[in-house]
Length: 46
Image (cartoon, rainbow, N blue to C red; front, side, top):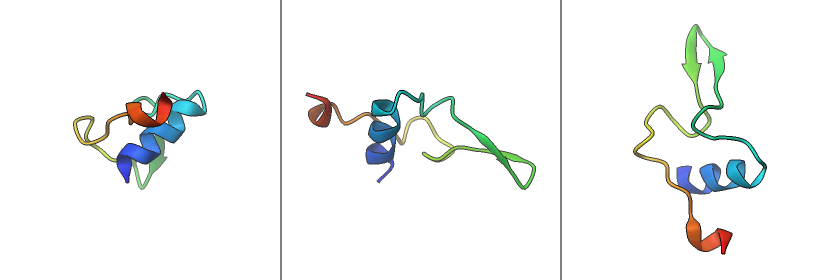
């Protein structure tokens, strides 16, 4: 699911690894806390 969210954000022109928002005093990202977990789906982009 994170791969799909990462790909959709990329297609919208947003950097999914830099996009963050404050929530309960923490820096949250829509793709989760780890960069290693989310990857772009190159097959969808082709």
